[in-house]
Length: 610
Image 1: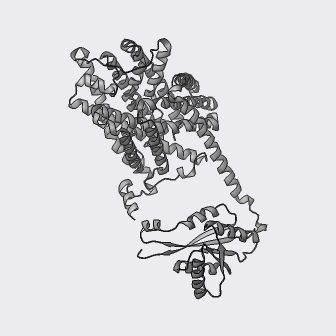
Image 2 (image 1 turned 60 degrees about the vertical axis):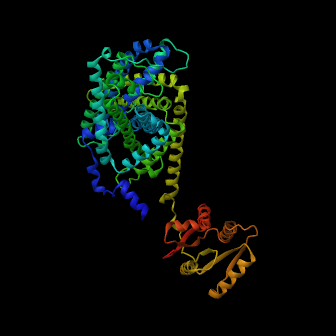
Image 3 (image 1 turned 90 degrees about the vertical axis):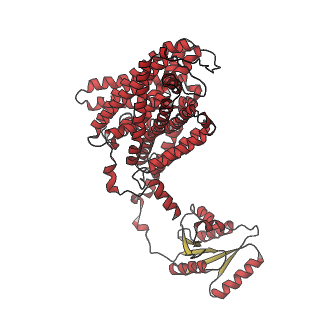
């Protein structure tokens, strides 16, 4: 009762199936919910470009960071145009899993699915960790509780997501638009003010690595900066969330997201170059830029809090897409079927909980350091980009609808570009942690395959076509076995029930010492003088062993007949009182699961006061 009340307070009252249609959201809410991940990359994308370039000096970073950012913007345009076609071709949701599976085959689809599941989990971990780092930049006293705070933030996100999509989108809209406002205000203020009007404090860059030069360093910076593109695919994955017409609304939202993201990314990178901002240990690059532009007053804290909030909300994108993707995999029998079920609030509750646990594990393993987690991030994103675009090339080739040639060329170009970027990221981030993702993806795909094999064999074995009516025969009087440890009302109810279903009832008692056996015999003869008590000797005081041996002996008497094992159980008035009693019956039940033709049942006796 208490747990149910807490559940209702945290998650809310159950929603009826008829309310599903009311969970569809308008474009302005969809932008807040689905674009939060992509927009939040502004908090760390420019910093990821600057850090490797600074190894060769601030002047080198100033010279090349803006051209690299422009290259990433060009890549963003290509990916955006490609995903517009995906949305048009797959109006019911065109995630990389669906596109790759339908056009490139099941194996490619599973690789895309595994990549996306990993990246959604990393999205939560990166967003929350980066959000805390930005908050710590403004409030250094929080540094000591950073990991602890990250875990609690993820748990809060889980509860908000379990409340339902509509509630989440409404709550998440305010911080998203607050962040957009604060970033454009920062960019406009920085452009108007200009670096000559502020005093730039010298920065000490704490890097111990040997400087790298030339093309290798530029490619490393480019691969790091590609984290700005994570989250673009969220709109195509989340088409079912939109109000009708869904494809049209999703395309408009995708274009708006790309426009806002590109403008902010270009503006922040330009200001970092213009103001000669360098990375300082313990302070984010965006925090340093904000301080240089607006000082350390109210505006600074306002912007830092807005950055923290958008990173907090960015994880909501993963909470929208991870459960949906995992449910699709479960429907196709490549993931546990529990992921199909919707909870009280019309959301895939098990997927939300699984995502939260995975993100918490990553945060703890990497101590909440965003820079350590990010190398794992982009590999899966660009792998799914590549598979999705390659799938669209095949899609256009097979259907050959109006304008298919131009569309196929666009998707083919997108495939080539994203594949090249994938190779660059995999090469330059391999030793920094990308190897973990490269190794994990095949393991997950193998797990998908084994799960699918299990479900296929399971369905085949239970198929009615294998049932031979000729094998049916009249039900015979089967054996009922009742293990007891004493004689009380619960045992008497169990014996009464056993006698109602069979004439062959065998009550068994495990003898561990002579005194307990003598007391049991006296009580038994007083109540059941006409019924035999089977005493099992246990010189080593094991309870479950002799009982299981006795059941095996009964099975061997007639291997084709059913045996019913009845456990007398009592239910305490208060749930925690149950912890004070022996759980031997529960352990024996677990052992009996794997014994053929053994039926296990319980006869419960409810205590009224204790």
